[in-house]
Image (cartoon, rainbow, N blue to C red; front, side, top):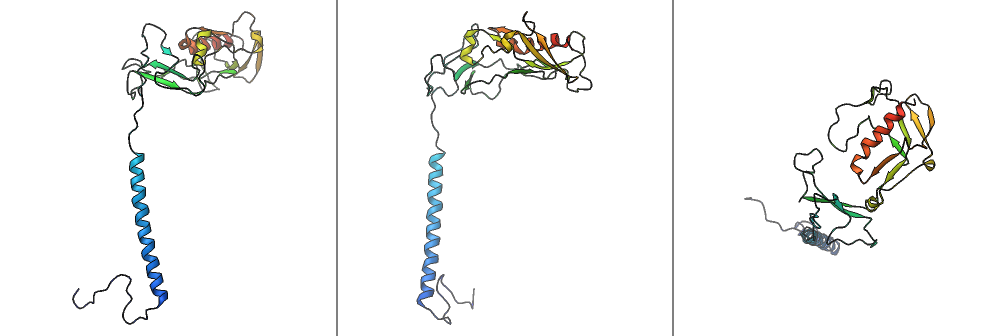
Length: 235
């Protein structure tokens, strides 16, 4: 601006006294600024390296191809290695996506198949009644969740049984997918918790409270609900 003398950064006004201490402080400040600029530039270069794409073999799990007329899953993923190298693959499996428009279709999949990658599947020692609904996906038509008025089951009887010991039988071929037989009390009896607050020990020597899915795991929820409705009769 006219009338205003030019000044340089780090140069003290003429009226001030320049000392060795002033000069040292100014050079220290310049060094810190330069070092900060170099740090920011280095971080930007490293960030660009991290953002680079990494090619993954069989990324959309299309291999091996699942035969729609055979078992709906396969306990291995082509191009993927498991650190434990267990026989039969206990940690991974490939399965086909359902048709577009199906209630259980996964819309954001990259391809026609998906994979399960994990160490194991948890199995509880108890069955819990979930609002008397036996759906894997979708929206149920009715809910039975109010303890003061649980409604009636499909047989027209009052809903009463809420939880019971697990009596679960599965074919050995499903073990590769962590679906395994699990029973309680040597399958001879099941403890049932009722909505009224009481627990009854019921005989299971005739397997009345045993859920046997065989080789059809997708029927498990329906079979469990059928078992609960049988237990309702013993309230």
